[in-house]
Amino acid sequence: KEVNFHSSQCNFPEFPGCYFCDTFDHWYQVATKFHTICSYVGGLSVALYAAKAMLFGRVFIDEMSSPTTASPAGLIFMTMALAFTGKGAAGAVAVFVASFLHLALLLWFIYMSLAYQTMPDPSWFPNTIGIGLCAVKVWFYNPLCGHFLIAMTLMLTFLYYPISLIRVALNEKMSSTICWMQMICPAISLYSLAIVMQPSFKEERPDI
Image 1: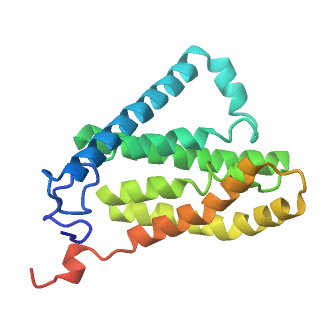
Image 2: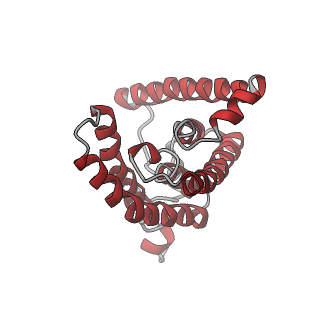
């Protein structure tokens, strides 16, 4: 039974405010267990990344000092937001921390790109437009913060995607991986926009 986002009727533990679900349904239990496994894998990835930053600080700083080597960093914060959503108060704190760090990374990445005078390409998307996934998860807890991040995602999509698309189309040596990254850009933006534009329970049912 589907209900509105941010509804008090929602009992789905993994995504607060989404759906009222029959927790005894077989496929629900399979999906929840699969999501839990993915969350543990994501949490392990985040822990290893944090350990790398603490144990190998010079290497970490060196990687974060170039737009090319800093490109995968956004994936860690996206993973963190996805893995800890719905995990109680500690999970909410982790989602907000991941979103804040992703926002800081976005600003730092744009600064580095301007300093190095590089042009947008699909490798930019995890650090820039990828913040849309954090926007969705933050929106579950605080709609205003989610709307702020999704606004940045849409702005960056309109700014970077056309330039990146032209560069990919004109480059005859572009790998299939880069082309795949090019395709996920509008998918993230449209997914984020579709989720956060859902009406709240109070907006759709003001009589309750």
